[in-house]
Image 1 (cartoon, rainbow over the protein chains, first blue to last red):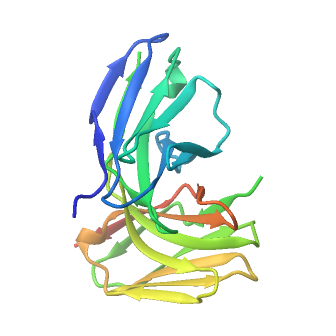
Image 2 (cartoon, helix red, strand yellow):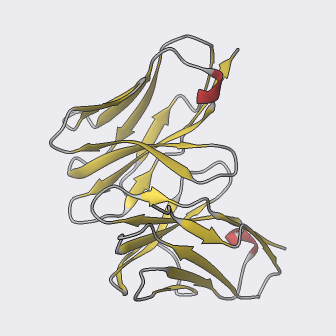
Length: 110
Length: 112
């Protein structure tokens, strides 16, 4: 059984650019959640997708958007990058209540 | 705003010692509580999940308890080892939501 995978591992962008992060959920999991973790902080919920529909959103602006595909993989898109967007972005998949996290994508915005 | 507090923020213990990590939360209507381990710069590894109807869960040297009435959970680690060194995070989901609300974590160092 393959766990949650994320790509890329690391990414460096400049202010104002756009970025797309990808997540493959664990086999059979139909729900994907995205979290942002700033240095020294706990992860903050961005949004969740269930069967290709957004199923809840945290306190993040509209320039954070997402997609979930029929195979339940997912993308996180961030437009107009700001310096404060520098963080570890975590994807988690679930079938019921327990969430399983991927290794994360480290985004640095210069 | 619902919050999760983890105390202490950092803990250093000699190898072999038993230890307790604390987590408190303000939402009385939690659905479940999950403990995670995070190694530096890495993702989260799920350690234990406690449903709201349960009081504790055990896995190997780890035991997690949940007291909804007092808004507290503890993670007990027996016979600590240097490989246990990591940041431990607790998180809960509220009723009707799979969104996890996290604490800032406790950074554990186990000294050989």
